[in-house]
Amino acid sequence: MSWIDEARHVLDRIESTQSEAIERAADIAAAAIGGGGVVHTFGTGHSRIPVEEMFPRYGSYPGWHPLVELSMTFHTEIAGSNGQRQAMFIERVPGFAAAILANFKLRPSDAILMFSATGRNAVPVETAMLAKEAGLKVIAVTSASEARAVPATHESGTILADHADVVIDICTPLGDAAIAIDGWANKVGPVSSIANITIVNELKVRTAQKLADMGIELPVLTGAQIVGVDASAQLFESAYLEHARRKADVLKVGPAIRVSA
Image 1 (cartoon, rainbow, N blue to C red):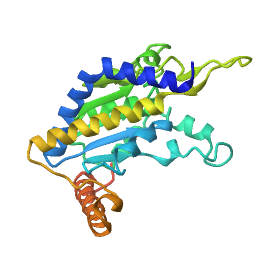
Image 2 (cartoon, rainbow, N blue to C red; image 1 turned 30 degrees about the vertical axis):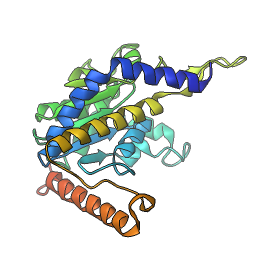
Image 3 (tube, helix red, strand yellow; image 1 turned 135 degrees about the vertical axis):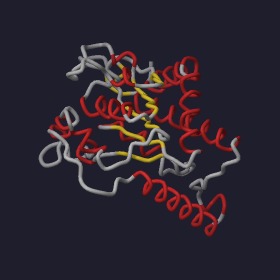
């Protein structure tokens, strides 16, 4: 089987088994964005990819608020300063999620969309816990095959999915890599990125339709080759300003909150 064949199977499984969960997630997202708020989007490691795919991206619109920490997502140095060892260590550090979220107002009228294939590391687990405690709806995009494969590592004994209102399964094989190579001990070719990107774009489209049904139209980042140079520039500016307005509403301004280590 080729990697493309396996990727196709993953997408087929998502379509046949996750449509209802995606629809419920779209209801939550439309309520938050349609109410003037945001859906925070959060991922560590390579789970940064679907965060960026959601917004800002051609064919995307404001209302999705990226929460991405470079310390856990800047991978291209690999070794040395800013290397993978540090990034993988940091995402397992208890208390770091609280330090991140201390910068924002966690409003029950908003929601959070979280990406984590394993759903076991401290930062995503605690981010979901804190968001849930603050009254936000939590949407988890994670792997059912990975989630229960090994015991939970967080001190609470829980994983990301345990704190979610909606769980969307990325339907990837255990270990993510899909293709066995003759003469090699381990499989290659992960499929979680294409699974995540498929889910977020389906969610983005369904949410847009729900917003339209509510009489709400948001500026969509659209290329000049489609609408012309001036209209494209105006759409980008409008989208950025709308994003800035919504982001300003959730940024916490005031005395610093002491966060225990």
